[in-house]
Amino acid sequence: MGEVTKGREAAEQAESAALLTGARAAGPPHPEGRAAFGKHAGNVAGICDAIDRRHGEPQQGAAKASHQGGGVVDKGGGDINSEGLHFGRLQVSLNNVHMSSSKMNNVQEESLRDQKKNRRRLQILEIARGIIATKGLRSLKVRDVAEAAGCSVGSVYNEFGDFDGVILTVNRETVQALTARLRGVPADDSVRQLYGLAETYLEFFAEHANLLRSLFEHRMEDDRPYPDDILQMVMDAFALMHPPLVRLLPDADDVKIALLSRTLFSAVHGIISLGLEERMVAVPPQMLRQQVEQFIDAHLVGLGIVSSR
Image (cartoon, rainbow, N blue to C red; front, side, top):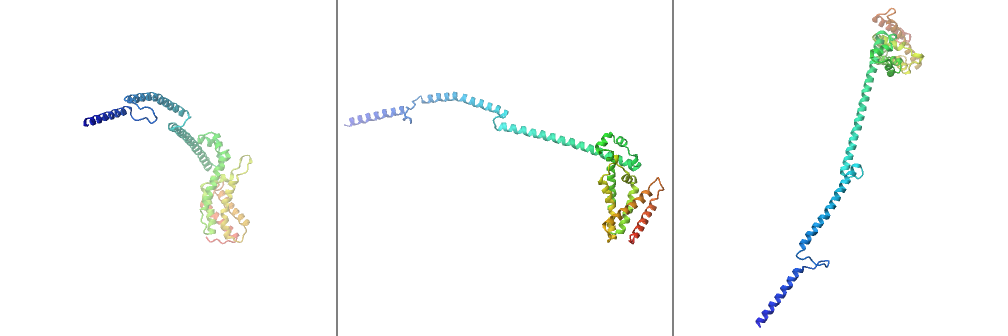
């Protein structure tokens, strides 16, 4: 019995071993019901990898060709990628720099032209003013001015419209300088202000006699009217005698005060102009000052104003 039992156990073990060996050869069932690979499964997988690599190379080549083709399109402005966008921005920046540089050059050229034009204008005025101041208005000739300025007569006309424009510009500057000097006279005492205005006018006239004469002697070509702005500037200079007369004559109306101030200024101008006229009997400056003061004394007495100087 012992031997029979051992033999049976040995047979059962042999059968179990055979079943186990078959299971290992077959392997576990495939999830989709297909038979699993045997001992050559690794080789089959290697073949598939090779096939995949062969299939993959053309795909990568196509992708590379597509990328290269896309790069060409990008440069042409079709598709947009980072490289194309960077290239476009660079072109825009370069165009902006070029435009800014061009505008800057134009501004610089215009500035240089303006500076040259202003220098020429100032030079013409300086020459004309010098001729009037030393020789008088009648000695001023446009050809002399152009020759001294190193330009053509046409350039003078281009700057000032005509020769009247040159003279009028000089006259404007003269009356502006005169008015500025007169405005500097102290106004704390009305009587002293009147004498101060007359004395200041005398001093300015003695320094710039021909320039002041040009202001009153110039006649426009073709009988054109004298510019209103210069006439108003002269009237404003006359009107500087208006405030002290208002304070000295508080009961007088504005019309009377305006007439008195113009008459007083005109009389002072006439005395000084004739007194400084070299072609007639010139009056020495000190004596001329005394004559102006004596006239103002008499004028104020006639108005009922007692001088306190």
